[in-house]
Image (cartoon, rainbow, N blue to C red):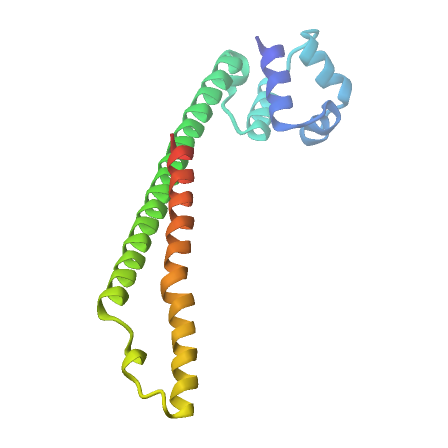
Length: 171
């Protein structure tokens, strides 16, 4: 048990036999003998080992370290599962916000389009005998036609396509 625990602890800390021997002030062969079960460390050396490995002497001597590692892996996997779940929830919330934003955008564009259609165009009542009013009216009409009559339809189509894409991707 000691030899297995010693080797496992050393590898878990990332020490080579040479590095551990330097930390414990022994030769590398002594570490090799302990790990192969040919000899055992004395009580003072066990205390030094427990300080280097940051564990208790009873753990070095008898407690099965591999079982502890398996439990650690289980805890880590449970934490990762929780993190993945939280990320999934955040992603779903982000999708819901995006879809809600797109729906609101479509509703606003439709309302704007209806409002402009109902109110009519102010330039239609202007006196076009004046050249300046004629040019301003034509420019205003072009602006209104392009940005208030064609653009909402394009925005609605693009928004619907994006909404369908997000909804299908969500499933």
